[in-house]
Image 1 (tube, helix red, strand yellow):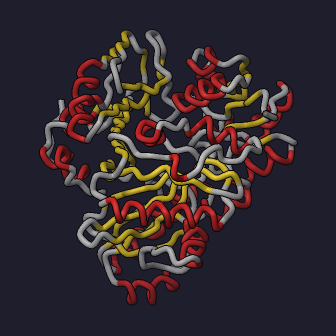
Image 2 (spheres, rainbow, N blue to C red; image 1 turned 45 degrees about the vertical axis):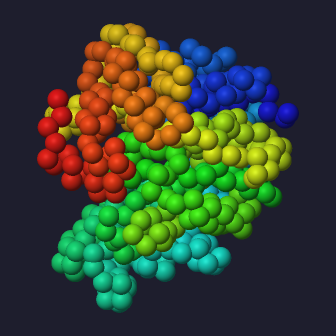
Length: 452
């Protein structure tokens, strides 16, 4: 293996996850940190650590020059971007490779091609992968949108061409709303991603969000089946499952094969996820975008396939071929992940920075908690609110739901408010239990719910 030391260019629970995977592979780890993260768990677990700047992410985790300097100064062989921050920044990938280091992910060219939703749609169209009807390219002014809106009709989604995480998205039902909200979406996208480009697509009512995990070695690609991520608050995922219970087996195989073919067509290297809108009434699916990185929700796929996706992605980016065939990847059981955020669901999801006074982590068969928490840790106010992910596996979905109920009851994070109570309330809802949800279900549910 060529990689002997790996710099983790991220923070929080994903940094912990990468460090543990690298440690299992015998790779030395170097954790970067801002002044706000000096006492963080990743810093404690890594073999070495490097201070890269002040708390604001623009002065630390988004500073390409500081990250490259840190990697070179400490003798790293490779850089892992995790997710968020610079994980889907083609310039960062190029800078890492220009410095003579291995980037654990696809090339900068691939990131730019697939990270931009418009060019990704074009790549999908080129191989016949169905996409949601919409604009063929970026829209730079409102006049360009009018003939497209006349053709596809309202309602439509305005979406940012770059980035993700629900930023720059608006649902519009008429021309007046479009004229008012399109500039807002562009401005939000520019602020979040440095790119104000937008595009539009038809809005599919009660659609479900289904995605396919892939890993490629630059020549071959494997899929690791599907996940459902329809439970979203303001287009931010909060609950994920694998496999997607709404997808029949024959549709699942077609979906996964087409996702694999798409990734193969671009010579994909590393871990990636293809996201689709799925219409469960017609069993049709439509390509949305490809995330060129490891996903937050990767643990549920690991649970149902038995494959360590983080370790496998490091292997292939180190120049190794995929170590198995598609037939060797077999689905077993059902897995659910609940994101535990430092937010108060009873108070408008107000962020909850503060000190963890007590922590009890659930255990037992089929229970996993990916987190950076420990008693006495102070959650800083500068970054994403996610504290960790509670993941369960069992032989089928009803059993997994029961196991999640018990795991949530056992989980105790004291000192700050968290979204644990939200998940406990969702587990009592008959629609969630029966899997009758869609991408706007949670926002509608929250408008009527009384979460304590």
